[in-house]
Length: 310
Length: 108
Image (cartoon, rainbow over all chains, first blue to last red; front, side):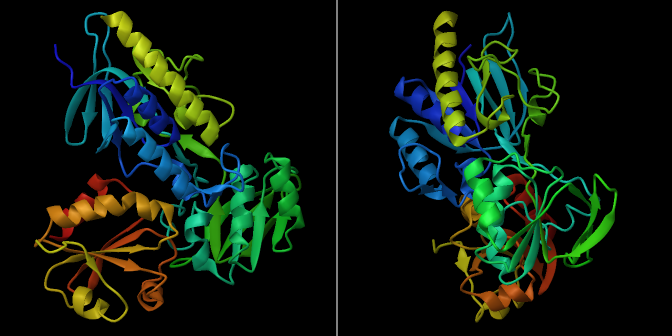
């Protein structure tokens, strides 16, 4: 049977674009499906300081524009589309079917690079308050909080970086963390401690977001003393990590307890010919640089897989 | 064909959107917003596909603080669909084309 493509890549962040670049450069017939426009989570990063090759840093926009242009140079085709499910191949069928909201495509090999999205606190009115004071992107929405007081929640690199970015606009950031130390890197921890506009609230979780039309505050509980309190704020920024975008492959490939796709170090999933790369993959360290590495390996292994099909 | 996507501002918002005979969709955006860039091509495509059925416009929140403030915009991108001068639907954040299309179908 004739398949539509050698390789289909789902997702246009750093992992997907790198896979696209490598596969395109190998003269394979490769298509990328992207729900929005390419760039991924990096588009919400104001300034990237730790991607090699850019002394002084680079804006998230510019970096992703360059990655996209470079992949296009090698013939990658990017199509706007949202994948609903995958029907994997097997011993009798050496191709996979990709089901979109508006059609179907087939491919010999599939690279899943759908990435992750911000994790929610899980509070009842949280989703309803998005755009009314709840935001998962300080870089995007910080300027709307000029001169106001906000709460940032989390203790990893994203929480520290975004809190620092928010201080450009707000008069005060309460950085609320459930432990008594940050997970984030030392350079960011030091910058946060030195910043007068950031007040750290340790050992504390947010139990409620208050306000009807607009956020007016948060309810807090100290996890060590169980003491409860309220804190009036104009904005709430949950920055507590990511959750994978993997619902569409549940039951198709193996996932770990957090829903991330498990692979070996060759990016092979539990299904032959299906690979995963980037933040959607079960791994320790989610960075642009590690996503790029995953993407290169996935494209290389996808090509190897197809060679043994013929 | 003329550019299907309209650019509105504080001065013409009332005439172009609130007093519009057609329902309309306004994309509140800013140059510094990554997710706004991510959905921009989708909004442009929809403007072409739904030309003459719905008026699709962009409003730069930096240059038009009055309108952005009036609708309490606290996050971008925000897409607001208006019908007869009233808000019919509101979508916050970068969502898929299918989700925006569903909202459009409800108002046209």
